[in-house]
Image (cartoon, rainbow, N blue to C red):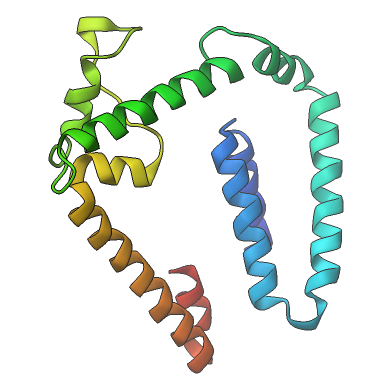
Length: 178
């Protein structure tokens, strides 16, 4: 049962065609192996890396080769160059918004209004966007005070979950998931 859930999640993440989701999947897989695999962790990492390499090779040389080539070499909307340029532009806007109100930010949800004025694709019809970077979004909306509070809350939660994993085996899986 868990194998099918894991495989379905894996396929869903792959089909998002989102590079960040793929990186998150790889990172959390490595973290899970390092935390839970015990003495066999290096064996799991080796075989996991080998399986990932085979899957990537099959996808890149197989049915997705045209999609990958178009995304990598093009410069239209949706291409790698377009994604990089718009992300960098969004990050710049987030930093400008934060710099205009460094302590308290522009306010909850106001980054979208701020960024709508600078949308060069939709212009006046824009509903705004996010910078696609969580920490910059926190800084822009909440400022240094709010972003620090959110990061402190997340780190405290992670620390508590790690303590619970180490001390109480009956809640280890739930704590690791949180």
